[in-house]
Image (tube, rainbow, N blue to C red; front, side):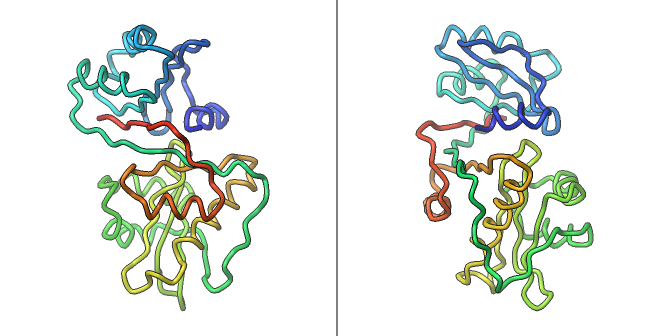
Length: 218
């Protein structure tokens, strides 16, 4: 789904593509995404990666690709994820208890201080300026946020400690799913394989959980 959506969004530089495998670069994020039918095809695709992309971020859709990327490019950080996608066209009912609206740049420091998965402030600034980050407000106090990553996936979901267990995280994701559906796109996300709470949330919202593991390698 991740490769399909960056192609559909018109932001993919397809380096190679046929029935046996696909290699592309997501231009906004710089991530190199690859999927192959077998190890031989995987090695052929990885050999096509331009020199300037060899020190970056990779998304491997098979374990043998993950292992080869680590060997070839001396990568040491691997995050294993499962994908979840909302494949229906039906808008979700939203929770009227919370005011959810796009964040302005004035909230950058607050977002940066609370969200620890992404440590790049410039990246978060870019996501806010793109209009793709939303905040949930309780009496005009920011209680949590969610956003769309540069490569089109939903993520960056964070609810501040005093406001947890009130349904704010679910409300934020419902809102973002509806905004993506309004654009004629498919809402999807990637979840760390050990994040059982997030998997349960996706299932509750009607997202389908993929069977394969996706590996982010850097």
